[in-house]
Structures are given as structure tokens and as C-alpha cells.
Image 1 (cartoon, helix red, strand yellow):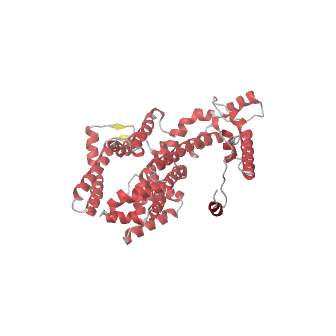
Image 2 (tube, rainbow, N blue to C red):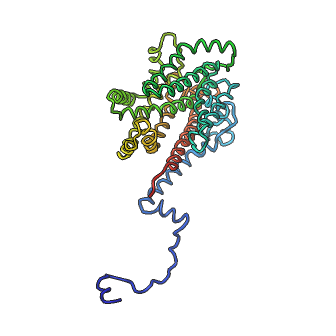
Image 3 (cartoon, one colour):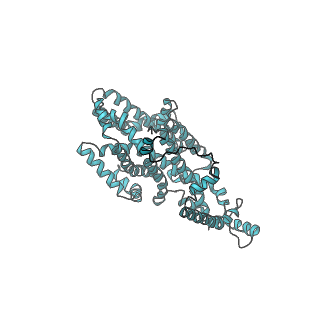
Length: 438
């Protein structure tokens, strides 16, 4: 080493270190345990405490699950089988109630011979959701997604097919008018596309439906809303609320950020009012007060009323979630849209909303999960939800009087599976839309 180098560099090794063997036990399971569970004395203490708590719960509840009985005709028979097999002091789950009444928990009081209709509706739901959830599929399949709500309504409630066809025709009529009139006036086209279908449904739908029903009586056996229940009811309200609340929430979020005073004021009042009122209050409004705002003699289905109020409630929360996504976008995105000469709606559709929705995915899915779980509150308006009303109906039967935990566990597992599936899809969607480069 030169004298100049020795004066400018504090220390430079001039000999190589001999080769050494790698540290012991630094790979595989032992390394994972050391890094994740025993990295410090505090983490080791928490790990041991957690293991002790898990052991306590397993030791306490595992015998109850292990002694469970699946084949029995009543709760008394379950207890007799458990006492004979495990001793008079033993306790165990009576899963036989799930085996005997699973159809009531899933379908409520829907007629048994017509189970094929909700099953077919549920299968078609996945078919309709596929082109929305997985964009690799052909876009032409979106027409099936658009038609699915009307098909599902006819399959579940039954009746003549022609009212459903007339509703679809009204939407098609509005779309044609929107496309034609938009060449001259965007606002006029929007108003005409709303007013004309409403007038058609109000004045022409009834007479045309009567004539078509007489000429071609195509119908399914009608089913009343009082026969819906269980997870069939929860999925109908949940899916309907999710489908309708997302576009409404987007419009409310844009309205809250609008420069137009009236639109902004109405959006703020609606969002703050809905968010300040408990959902159970809105459900009572749906069951009692909503009919007072309708023409006399109008028979407005209770499930549809509940679905509308649940949609409004969820849309207010989704609007705030999306507003957060809009606020998170850099100002440069808006300036870029203006620099390209894009008008408002085109800029929102092509630049602003795709980025805001991507940011808002976790919050939107959390709102959907909360809304789906809140469908159990419909028990307070006389509908048979899967968490309270159906188990109560099962316990009203003498054979199962006294059964308690088993239906709740079964319902909880199904809720967990459905909500977990939604959360996992949201994580998949976030990863797929990730565009950041680090």
C-alpha cells in the first residue's frame, strides 16, 4: 500500500479472509420460525401465549365437534346417541338438524319441486358475472350480463314472461332514443331516454301485456315474496344491491365534486343523510312508509322495496369511497385530460374513473361485504333471513326445539365462504391492475 493511499483511506484490508461454512440452521422451517415467531424475546412470548390460547380452545371445543351426530330425526335422538356412545355426561353437536333442514336454510320456504329455478338462477349468475370479472372473455357476452337481472326476476318470481319482455323493450327504446337524439343535444337525449320508457311502462305496457298473454300464455308458476328466505333471500338482496349501488355511488361521488351548485348540494345532502341514519330505520321505511308515496292500490313487492333502500344505503358509502379515490389522483391527470381536449364524460370514462376505481377497490369490496352481511337485518321487516328467522322457524318444530349453535355455525360458515371469495377476488383484481414499476 502506498503512503498516499495509507493516509487517505482509514482502513483497507490487504489479505483475503479464509472461506467459512454457512451459518447453521439458516434455511427451511427453522429459519422461518426464527424470523417470524421467535425473532425476539417479546415475539417468542407472544407466540407461546398464542399457542396456549389455541390449545385451550381446541381442547375445550374439539370434543363437542368430535361427538357430533349426523343421523338423527330429533334433538332428543341426538342426545340419546351421544349418551350411548360417549357416556351420559358427554356433550356433542347435533349436525342432524343441518342434514334435515339444510334446504330450509338455503331456500327458505320456496316450493321444493321448484328448487331448479333458484339453482338455475344461481348458475346463470356466475355466467353473467364472468365477462365482468374476467375481461379476457369476449365482450359480446356482456349482453347476457345485461339481460340477466330480468331473466333472474322471471325465474325466481315466475308469472307471465311478457311483463319482463316489456321492461326489456322499454330499456331498448330508451337506448335507441339516446343514440338518435344525442346527435343534437346530450341533455335532451338523456331526458328523452328516461321519460319515453317511463311513459311506455306507465300507459302501454299493461294493455300490450294483456294481449300478448292472451295470444301466447308463456308463464311460470308465480311465487310470492313470503316464500323467499334463507340464503336465497340474502343473495337476491345482496347481489341486487351490489349491482345497483356501484353505478349510483359513482354518480353521487361525481356529483359531490361537481361545480354545479344544485347537483353538488343534492349529492351532499343525500350522502350525509343516508350515512347518518341506521340501516334498520331505512328498512322500516321500506316496509311501512314507502307505500304512502306510491299511487293508491299499488302493490310494491316488499323484497324490491328492501332492495331499493339497501341500494341507497350502500351507494352513499360507496360514493365516499370513490370520492377518496378521486381525491387521491394527482392534479396532473385532470390537466392531461383537458390538454387532450376531452369533454367531461369522456375524460371521466377514459382517464379519471379507471384510476380512481382501481384505488378504491379495497374500500368498495369492504362496503359490499358489509352490505351482504347486513341483509340479515331484513328479519325486522318480516322477511326470513338465514341468521335469525330461519333458525327460529326450525326451533319452532317440536323435534328440534332447543337446538341453538348448529344452525348459527352452518350459516356463519356459508357467510364466511362467500365473503372470503369476494375479498380474494378483490386482491386478484388489485394485482392484475397493478401498473406501478419499482
